[in-house]
Image (cartoon, rainbow, N blue to C red; front, side):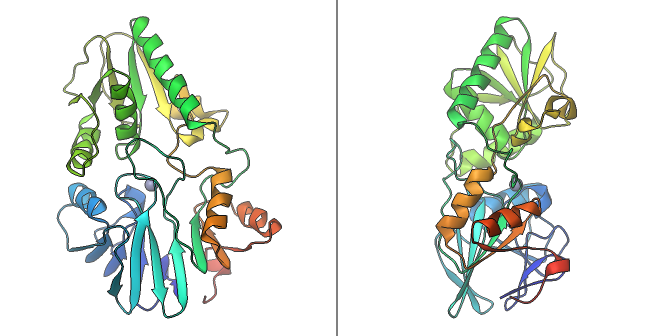
Length: 314
Ligand SMILES: [Zn+2]
């Protein structure tokens, strides 16, 4: 049903899945840069299409709204929410009696700006397992949120500017909504701001925030994508929101004062939960440590790494 050709392809429709290089036909699970290219023809959800066009310019696109099956290239394709960022989708492909679910980046925990993940059952499950090591068990999300808001409050009280380092797509909007819900005034870097407009267009309200234009007023919180410079008056306290905050050297690596483990990816336990819910006969692991394949096998799951060296037709 699928094969490897410098990346994952659905065989019958010759559909490239999350390729970073231009393809005749490509499926985009979501609009993060490492899952997109300027394809001749792209398939994705309506929200991902809007973000794809915003980031890479208008392009021929077939929109696949969640839970609406379409016949395409001889197979039946259905998208389901992946809970990762606006528009993020899992892809279910059905061909005769066979079924395959591709997870893309996903998480099972709920957040305020993304529809919760839905996992249909499938015989083959291709699983993104970024946090496939036992040390990546994330703490309760609500506790992390409380710690984040307390830290912002304390920073403002001490006369410094909280600078929240968060991906432009997904984390910036979640951080903004958490902050505005708690009554903070938010200033967003331009890159996050134009993506936030798409969130609003698709019905995700983010509260009261404005575009960064070079200044931050006392009491405001600045949200900036990692690596983007933004000058602030006086002292700043930089706060990163990422699952990698679990790593001991995270603060040094990310060059921040605080790193909090608020993630948009499934943690170690959620990966097992996803496998159980999909109930697949075979699981192929990608974007994660190869040792996770062994952990699945120890639990009786027929698992394989999804990579050319070990690939054979399935
Ligand atoms: Zn992603």
